[in-house]
Image (cartoon, rainbow, N blue to C red; front, top):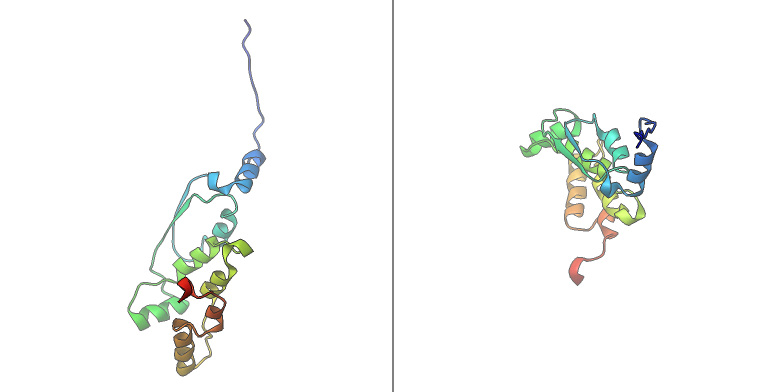
Length: 141
């Protein structure tokens, strides 16, 4: 009996695996990220099409921009990096509830007065804002 040798050329990245992951991202590779900031936002936005098996440990130590203002105003950890990562991983398609995506993607205007910001935030909280009007009333309330 002769020795049988099987050879296969390997392309990196492997187009066969990439095609499989693209068709069924729930079976994609497992990936773990330790990060903060916006460093992996764009990678996460692309990655969601190839795997749903990613874990993101995002640090709450953002010290710049809007997060710093919220952190100081409300004496809380920074949530800007976490929100950015969740937005990057969110399903932006029609089946992914674009209303929720719009709500969480909304940013209060920088040039608004404190009174305008307070009023807009109160409208959102009480469900009287156009961002909220698109949602059906929960539980027939």
